[in-house]
Image (cartoon, rainbow, N blue to C red; front, top):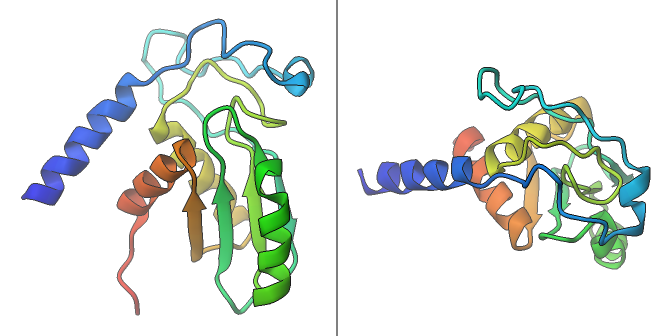
Length: 158
């Protein structure tokens, strides 16, 4: 019961977090180069937001081992993890994925912004790259996204 209450509370909180209509600003030099996706909800909440094609970097490794996915924090981007991702891939032989979340780095920008939709973006991307199952490591915003994804898609070990 307690875990269910925590999940319900987290989901209420993630639904309440929305990006301002004007975005986060031009703090990043790549901001102007990134396309802005139209809102799939039309601003009226009628339709569910669609996953976006996220920008990512995949380092090669042994396909038999679960990949490691690094998710950056607020105002960050996939390059925050370049050094650790490279070292991790070399030392463990695993595939390592770094991802730009929506509205960050080189990923498309959209007025639809919540932890739920960021989780959906990953649920769309990871199977397309053949990275299921995987280990997800997140910092700050990326950590919250990772926790929600784990709650939504957790599977008991075989």
